[in-house]
Length: 524
Image (cartoon, rainbow, N blue to C red):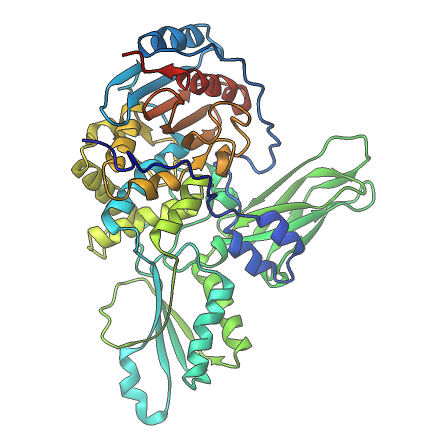
């Protein structure tokens, strides 16, 4: 059986959705909207937003060779132990036939980092379909009939985990209410029961849960469940000034500011941490006098309250008064008609930032939505239900359930386990479905887009590798589709664990492996 794009796979360089959060936040007149439209830049924590990693110098690859010579080529590189004490898992298979061209510890478990998103997005696309949209709805509350004689308006807002929802879209929702002549909501119930369980994965490292890319996952979300601030240098010896991008976000926060402004000759670094049990921000580090402000993005502490505050402001801007607000965490059967709604872009579009730009919040939300839609036990833990639905879906596609063990949807959890074989077989499985092209086009393109934009430029791999990257401290990964110039397409996976050096020191070897694989030619 040939793969879904054989005969029609054009080397399109169409870029996925590009996020420009930093520029938008610094230049927008509406910072809260800007942060949402960008969905908060998400290092793959995979890619630290402060890091200035340049495209590594890649060694010159040898000339083309037959597939039978590939093991010798790759072993020579890996046996030289380019990264001391590191552990490598590599698998190269024909996308069409499944023939293995090279394998090293391919059936063993590794921590995959953001390569876990391959499982999440492949399962979600297969189970829910490319046209699936995430809907946020307003209903008349069932109790409204009891108060009809008093003219009261009671509404219920139901969130279904849309990670793309922005302040601007909330304005669209409230505009619909204004158009219906609603000038006051006497009581609003925010139904936050769609997702059950912890909003922050207990398996995530403390550092990740402190960062914007580790934002909590909730039934109602707005502006990426994150807020932005700037640290501004002052006179030498003075603490950095904390400036909230949206002044309303700073209400109630206490700041423990131990940062300082230093001379122009000193090093620069900043740290921003928040408490989990109260509105306390701890600021540290130093910036040079006269230098540019440093942008920081932190997750909100209470996503539902954050959503309600944004909604209240949107209603006020529309001239709609809002009375008491209740939060419902127990699922309720809806009996009244929907009176207003907003919907996300189709799933086919959401996969692009999830994979190409490694948006963690998207992946976590999609995994829970998958569980809610496929295993509709509304009292079940949403993360557990999502993992169960993911494994059931991929098993139906032919991926062995024993070859990987998910702990989240994004790859931030170090309890995630996957073999190179599980990733390659997932890539091959989705390539045999009608969604093959959609999935491939959601991946980053070497030298062109997403997290691969600055890698493989001006090499034979540029524009020929569609991949998912991953990186957390001591872990790096790259899996995807490679189209060598002189060989049919391949599915590849490279997982590296247990190194004690910066990720940038590992990437040149990973890239050299890909360059050598791309030299394979058919010798029949």
